[in-house]
Length: 246
Ligand SMILES: [Zn+2]
Ligand SMILES: [Zn+2]
Image (cartoon, rainbow, N blue to C red; front, side, top):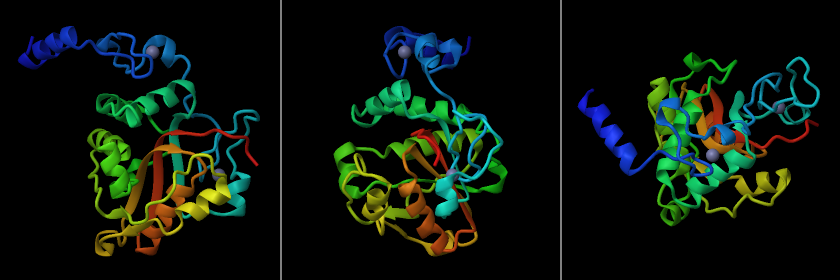
């Protein structure tokens, strides 16, 4: 047994690994961050979906096709994909991480996200990860940017550099919670700025965030990155709200 394994075993006795959602003690050797009961309740996003925004067609499994939303307003991002639906277990774990300031849950969720295969997403087309930034005021309140923690785990797994300073949140916006799509778009417009256009020009970028709700935040980030000369912008999120397709 190596020293690292020994220390890890001792650590597990003192701080046994817990399920990221319900805090039940779990077996680290399972390689999972959730207990079997919680894991069984997670809806992983696979199957037919909108090739642009990644909306899954759950009720009417069909050939993948562009959804009504993307047909009406083509987004600035080339594609967005999420690992799981934003519901029950994932919602609880994100809540614990973000509002309970539980960094270790955040790292665990990052490795969970990084372990998802994102079928039909070609990582080799991209070269840089950018977390969706928080405004400095919110960063001070929370103490960390949840998207940066996720991006760091993604970067480690997929061998990508992570840059958290190229995109900045310059306006302190109201929370998007409770707003509809049109209100969200209005609220977020002009919230981001690119700090160094030379470092964005010609790059294919993956934005990383915890939740894709209507796509307004991701789309606004993509808009300013494309305006700054990015070649292509995609987004990967830990979860997404699954609504009925238009
Ligand atoms: Zn659990
Ligand atoms: Zn779509």
